[in-house]
Length: 304
Image (tube, rainbow, N blue to C red; front, side, top):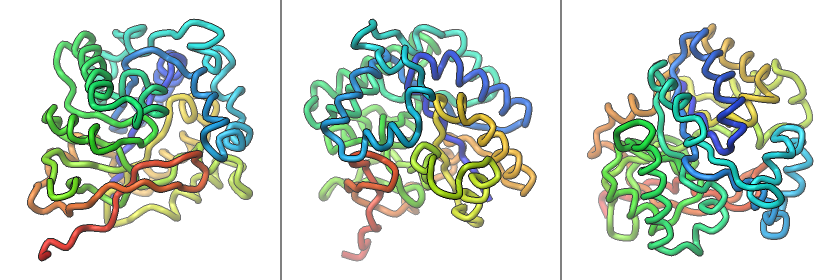
C-alpha cells in the first residue's frame, strides 16, 4: 500500500509553526512527503466573505473551531491587520525542507484570491498568479518549480491550459481516484494530474465517533485502497498545529502496517502518459467542505 502525503501550507503561521512540527515528526519517522507552499501574501481574513458566498462555510468554521485552530492573527490577516508574506518570510525554512528530502511545490501565490475568485480572474489574472508564484519559488529555491497544487482544489479550463504550458512534472488540483490526463473538450493535456483520494481531516473533524486519535486512524484505515495509491492531503494549519496528535497516531499506525510512503514526484516519474485514463474535470460538492471543488470524472471511452 502506497501513501503519498500532500502537505498544503496556506498561511504565514502554518509555515512558521505547523511545518517545522510536521517536518520534525516525518524526519524522526523517516517518512517521505510533498509540501506545497503558498508563495505570496496571507490574506486569510478576506476568506471570511465565504460566509455569504458558500453554503456551509460558517458551519464548517464552527465545527472545526477555526478561531482556535488558526488563531485570530491569521483570521484577520489582510483585513484588520496587514497581510503577512508566507514563503518569502521563511525562505531558509523552505530550502531546509528540500535538504531534508521532502518535495517542495507551489500552492498558488495568493491562496485566497485564487480559491475565491478563480472564475473572475480571467486568463490574464490566472497567468499573473502563476507567474508570481513561480517567480517567488525560483527566488527561494534557485530553480523553477516542477509541481503545482491548486488552492482549495479549485481549477478551471483556463488555469489547466496555462499550467500545461509550464511543462510541470505533474499537478495535483483535483479530488479523484488515481492519476489521469485531463480532457478539455477534444484536447487532451500533457501534464498528468495526481488527485487527492482521501477526505481531509478538516472535512471530518467534529463528526460523531471521531473524537480521538484512535478513531480518526480507524476512519482512514477503512478508506485506504490496499492495492493502489492513496493521496492524503493534510494542512500545516490543522495536522501541524491543533491536530498533531491525531496525525502522529495515524502515520505511526500506517508505518506499522507496512505502508510505503512516497513523494508525489516519485509517482509522476513512473507514470506512462499513454497508459493513463483520460478524464474530464467536473465541479462537485463534497461532505464537510463549503462550496465546490474540482473532481475527476469517469474515464472517457477511448474507442469513441
